[in-house]
Image 1: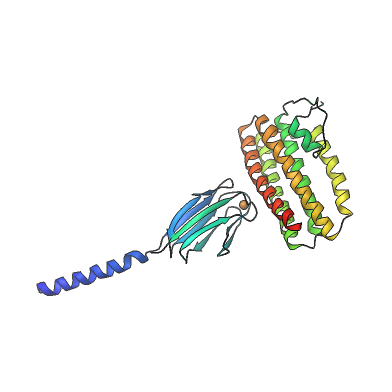
Image 2: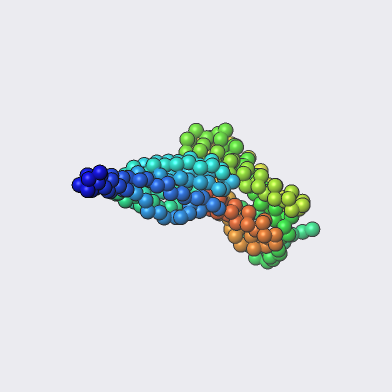
Length: 108
Length: 175
Ligand SMILES: [Cu+2]
């Protein structure tokens, strides 16, 4: 392989990496234990997924105040919600409105 | 044995009726606390079941179903715990007056229909959760000697504080 060609291949690989990095989505867990969302506030990126884990012995919901989503969480169960739009979302539990949290969704 | 009523428990037992000023505080025992907590929960399950049958409001229906589900779940936990701890819940004057007052309240609610029922049920849920929460916070939780019982009552208090907020929201929307 000539010097010239190998440079070209490397440059191409770097380009692919540079392009791929920002779109690697993450899953962030928010646990409910004794009527508390934890962490109570998280910062994520568009394309990330929230995994809700209800460790309590009663059902809860995770309900966005802006009505973007309303997730039912049976006792001991989990569920996921994709974060599709940038912005700050305050959410609460419809059954127990004393349970509140916040997700800040940033552009990638 | 006659159990003297402390302030918060007296309010719970008499559902906010003024009480004699000389009511002294005495620490209820764990078997009595378990009985009081279970009885208080059971009363709200029954009230919820009545509301599920009677209400025509979707909002009140959903709330009533939540009350039945949550209070049953807490009571199941409480029963499992007393069994594990080998504690036999002990009936007492507070439980007895809770039951007596609940029967009177239920008789009153049964006679009402439609919006009058919804309002009376939700107003009672607000007052009842306030009284139960105060009793848990001021008397039952501090008096509980077993750590697991204390912990369960603490979780129950958070659940019932949620119910109170929920009931208050509905009460405001019914006005
Ligand atoms: Cu909840």
